[in-house]
Amino acid sequence: MAKATARHILVATEAQCNELKAQIEGGADFAAIAKANSSCPSSRDGGNLGSFGPGQMVKEFDSVVFSAPVNTVQGPVKTQFGYHLLEVTSRQD
Image (cartoon, rainbow, N blue to C red):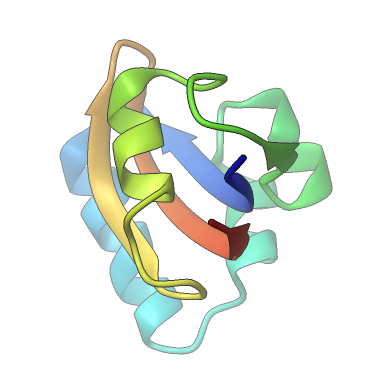
């Protein structure tokens, strides 16, 4: 069965999400940005969500995590919780 590890940043607006993505693409540390900005409790651990399989996260999240290139920041991804930046840190298909 497929498994992935990922980290994310959750914010309220698409504009903020895009702004943070630009900072990360410009060299800012993902974990530091997550700790400072993410509204998810995972922010304490740099946005790390640990390991999970398909169907354990919301659909929008799942489809990105199990198709996006590893170690590339994806987003904004809109879910019922807000806007996410996602980075798949490993995946076994």
